Length: 149
Image (cartoon, rainbow, N blue to C red; front, side, top):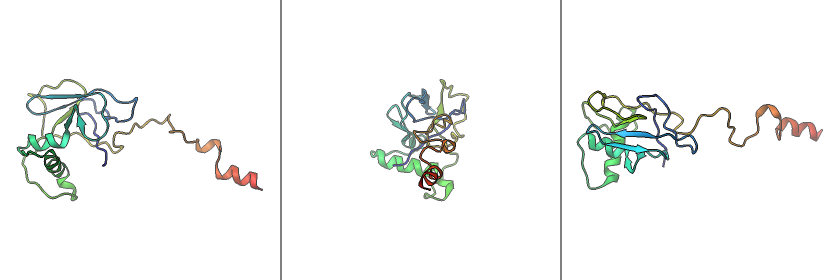
């Protein structure tokens, strides 16, 4: 299963799923229900509520099957990218993704959060994830070739 992540609408910060980089965020529906999440894992679930299920529900869909609602929500979200069947809803309203409490009377639910191209993985230039730096030659092919000569 792929990961889903976004940038918050109020602070434009990445909703990160990398341990140690997670911050508290809220998914909020147009009725004012806040779903707080401090341990986002990257699968679109905030406080037990799936973003795509909520998206389908906010746009008038209902079903006894959360899998069916999730599929409908994904179809709504990606309808303009040619990968999914077209579901015609006008206008579409989206769950808000924010770091701070939200006033539903002033928020534009017609604007969706920007997708995170890093899919929630922390973009930390100081962390090389245990890999050696390219310029220190530890274990590089260049060093190996010099030793082999």
